[in-house]
Length: 359
Image (cartoon, helix red, strand yellow):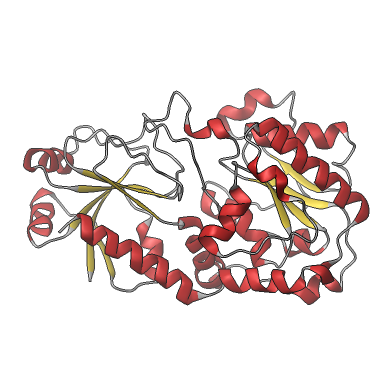
């Protein structure tokens, strides 16, 4: 068994659907916490929860005894200064940026394509109990009349505003299946970037996981491709003044790119440098060279890179895509995402690395 004590929650619980040997316990009180530590449980602290670790009795005990801890930042490409990581004891960072090279302030960093695994778990195991999340297949696309593209923007970010401006300037929004949301502090942008909702938009309150991972099948069936606006979309995302760790490189794929893969739909991404090449490098996702010129992927200037992506998207919106050219790759990529053994391998290697750092 892989035994963990969680403090403030953890994202590892979703991995239990892949590996039943993962055992996660929430302590009842300090004495229970001490007992679990004594019998070999590893301490797992949520870096991202709003609840502060200040004045937390478990953290005080950890610092007093210098107990090594795992910092769960699996929802992040990087760790920010405002995250719950300021703990005076040996720390190992768990993070989803597969290109992370610098982990200053942490003894170790263990990398996992968390959203790749979460997408599989949600769409094939958890959500089907309550929602219809069946994957489309290639015939669903070959037998459906298509128009424009799909572009879902759930949170206002720089790359998404760029796409909004491009689509507006080129009169592409009306024909596209295009959404844009300003949430919380982003409402300051409302006048310049008004919310665009889809008639069949997902209606979920106070659950970001459901909001981000649910979909309407028609979005994918009736559009030629998915213009994905990824979370870590530009080179400065990991070098902001709020970043605790300064990294030059980033590969942080989220559910946004896995949705079209799941539904056998081609995609092109507003994302970090080498994002597409890294999909192949780390996840064995085949690129659609038959329809896209991926020379933009190595362009360091993010504005130039985004423009190159949008210009290609505009051309495909006009001329459409011959799915027969790429149907074997579409099926291959879907099979990669649906291969449970691949997910088990990632999780097993991740757990072994945790054991290596916490003997």
